[in-house]
Image (cartoon, helix red, strand yellow):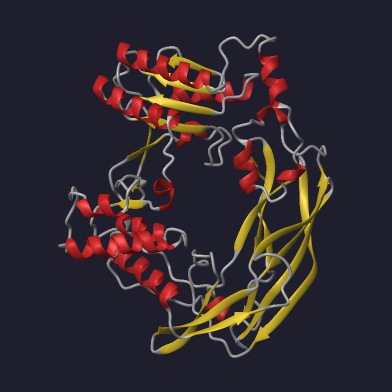
Length: 464
């Protein structure tokens, strides 16, 4: 209950606050957020623009303090620190290099006599205490700007074979003693790359199917070399790549599963995706260690680097109809939960290097329903614009945890869908007054189907 109330109160506070000071800067260059100004083999130059934000009142222990509302930023700062919002963006760097940054230009404004609220701790589900906003006095008692620098770069990581760092920018600094808030309307940062081989990314791991993910996440994606994927595809037919593929289908040994796996394999092959089926026995058995070893070996040693893996079958130890997964202990004592991300994470940074999915069918009938459904959808995608313009979420009524809130917020954070989902939700809530702890299934009212034809329904199951 506490977590639900906490997120709901904070969300309503951020989006519906009436008492607010709005700051708009017409002299700010570029679009809001990160702008790539220059990209060279030895450096990149990035400008962060802050065209607007607001200071909103928040009552804390009888004192009116200020909360900084930066559009598009929802996460809090570290607990107890001045709650200054910031953002980050991946920057590709040459393989083996070390990035160094320097601020080359900045445009600032100082707002005086501002009492910035401390960041709260994010409560656990089973924590029933009131939400606490406690100042870290080591920071709040220091006559100095926090943070020390508005710019931060992370340790080097990899995104599908591309060395990268996260460039973090907090466009504010705050002195808790003088109560001066420094606002960075524009800040320009140059990252220089020391050492390395000058190559952005390992071309062996580049993929037609992964490039859109890299393009969405890497600010300087244009630094990566162009790949002739058609020529690469043609070359696969000329070399010794027997048993290798882009799309792995991992199947139980039961005949129904192998038949449907073969149908999916043919379907993907017709789409131009190099696909192969591997039974659980062929990868060494239905154990976490065997599956992980198989996937890691394929990623590191195959000429054709696997792009994705479909696990056909629900979690379980019966290799004729199930495929095992790694169980993780819940930090707060809830039952252990299963996750396939350990298989997807080859490099050990807890981020997937291979796209993993699972069709959780437990028998032949479920296989038929699930497989034919996605095939029909891909062969005949909906053409009615209402299908894309008027989505709706489905949720279980839950006052004790936050699954319901996640579904409700989907429409609010997307302006295109805001009115549709909000109106549907409010009408549904009026018709279905809830009692504490009430759970679905609740029938979908007929007016939803009639009022919003051609829907996308996003179910929000209570899973980890």
